[in-house]
Length: 234
Image 1 (cartoon, helix red, strand yellow):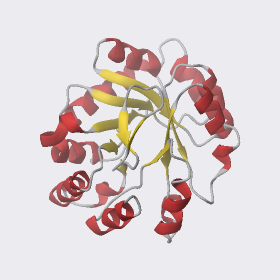
Image 2 (cartoon, helix red, strand yellow):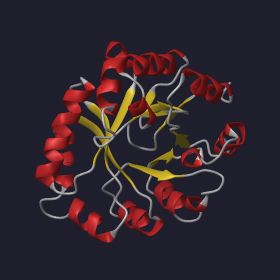
Image 3 (cartoon, helix red, strand yellow):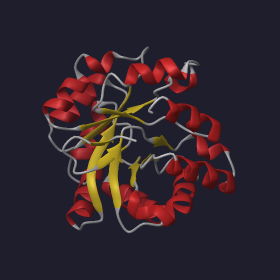
Image 4 (tube, helix red, strand yellow):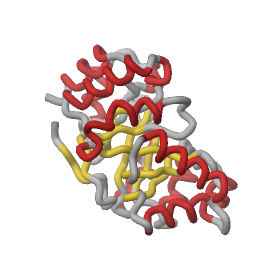
């Protein structure tokens, strides 16, 4: 599978990633089989979050034998430093890793949250400290609000952006993605299948393949799903 630079984050990822929400719904053993099949099929980028129930634990258990060969992204939900520090510590433990490749501020979608994250005593302080210590390689954020995303991008504090993008939610092309590209940011597309609303995976991924610097992270909960999707990338 083709690999690309995730903007100027310093991370090199496969053109297709794996989203970690749906593996919450399967057992640990099923999750390990699914995630290892993703690896066998060539995927080297895996995204999860502190608040995705036991997703981090399942990712950590499945990918431990291949840790040096994959890029793992997770997120802190907390917007203030003390809580973010606790979440980050838990993520290291759950993921069975000493270094997180990409840590993201989760769902920064209103001005209050952005101000908290970047202000004194905000979550960003903890993430920046972890990066300075070499425990984190890159810092990004996720959002569902175009205006707030552009404001966050303009701060030049983040090196990646994660935003919903599919052929019915294509608005980010207008101002969010151009702003991110201008800053050299990596772009990650969540909800490539419209959060499960879009049935034609072939159409969804053919649309996304037009944007070669955008990395989709479909949520996977079965081997059949990922085998079908990877088939569009051959």
